[in-house]
Every structure is written in structure tokens, then in C-alpha cells.
Length: 172
Figure 1 (cartoon, rainbow, N blue to C red):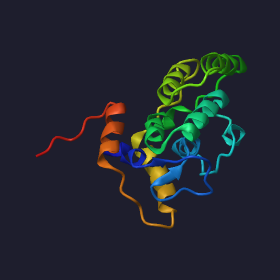
Figure 2: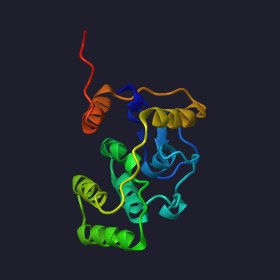
Figure 3: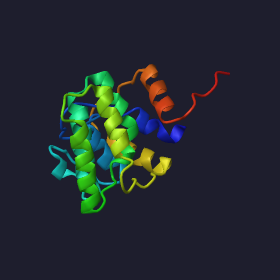
């Protein structure tokens, strides 16, 4: 469980960011770039993402990230490691058609999250990221931040661990 602490303590924020703060301070796509092993880069539009990322999926993730409130946005953290899943043109087209068919009308955040979960099942899945590698990548970016790290709320961390299927350590 400790191997995921770095991502659980990351904070997703609205918009693009020149450089993340010590608690993350990035959008979902910027965090996904780091999680996938690329150097940090601001992401203003989906074309700023590396080619290994699905454009339709990243566009949906960006929309959810930017339309969510600060609490809702943290529910996107479990998806950070799943966005590097670009596939053939046919699959990317199928993904875009799937998203378009389900987002024609305004969606609640939860409905958008359900669309994201379902579209990620189409085509190639992101390669699993080793927890130690992920922690090292996130910590490397965090260490470059200038200000001191803030403490995330314990309840959010507990929720994220639950979403990722991890159990809280038992009290001694």
C-alpha cells in the first residue's frame, strides 16, 4: 500500500499548470504524463499529450477535471495510471464515437466518471505501472516544487485507497 502513497497524496487541480506544487497541483493529464514516466509538461490541450495517450479519453478526462469541483476532481486520481492507452485509428474512432454518444447532453460528474470507466474498456489497456516506479516518478516531480508540501485530508486518502481496492492498515 505504501507504494501508492505518492499518487494518493497528489492533488488534482483545474486547468493547466506551469509546474506542479509540492502536493501535486496538476490536472489529471499532467499527472498521467508523470505517472507514465515522461518528464513533466503543462497540458493545455490533448495534443500536448505524448502519442501513447488516447486523445478521446484524455479529452474526456480533461473535461471532467476542469468541470469538477475540488472534491469531485480527486475522484479522478485512480484513472491517472490508465490514460496511456493509445490504440489504432479504428479503436480511437470507436472511443470517440462512444464518448460522443454518451455526452451529447449535459452530464453530472458521476455520469461522466461512468463514461470514462466504460470507454477505458475499449481497445488497448494501459500497461500496469509498478508501484515503486510510480512513487519515484511522482516524488521526483514533487521534490522539484519550491514550497513545503501540504497535508491532504485523511478522509480523501482513505477514499482513494478504497477506490483502488487497498485496505487501510489496522490500528494496533
